[in-house]
Image 1 (cartoon, rainbow, N blue to C red):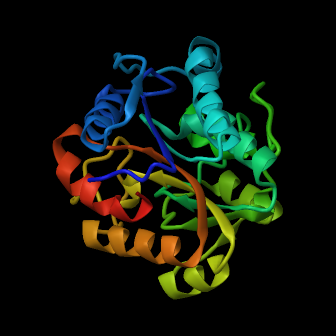
Image 2: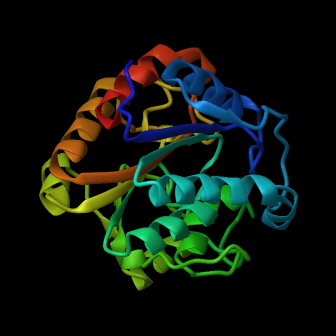
Image 3: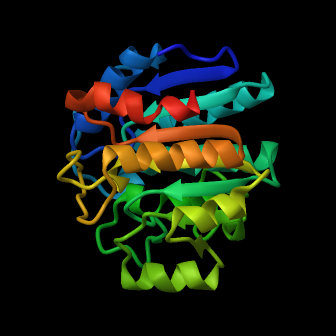
Length: 254
């Protein structure tokens, strides 16, 4: 795959809140396939609560936001590969600062809109978007207007999380056609957790049935990139055994 010179492609391999090493290994393998610059090294995952991850993964989380910031400052489109969605505690506030008028397209099986008060698991990856929107304070800042978040493919939402989504005006669209209409000629930053794919298609750390297949996701990305101005994308949840399939799926963003 040839990468457009306007793209800034980085694979961030350090641990954020990974409970296994699979996502980090997936980011490494997919990054190699796409010619990404690798930062850090693949480590081991382990279970820990959000406070511990915020402390111990501080450097990795700051690096995630720094990579987005550097790319946007240089006028490039950042493509950031990482293990988990926790990176968005720093990446999405940076996007909001550079492009306050942009929409964030949230492609994920999970809403990740819990807070420490609502989360049954206390997993940082399940409350990272809410942090970026200022619903709770992770210590990494906020600034993303939740009304500028559009969710597609989300199919696992906790009860307290659903209340927060409704209270803060996060949008949801269920069909590609209306999504393309909404995004037409708009600036868009894509958050793509590959667990939007069905777990029978791609193994996931937190599998949720009823997801897309590879071709459906490729067509969705093609539709989005055709309708909107892509200002960046972050990709998490890759699996090292499916690099060729994922590279093909991601071709529209390159």
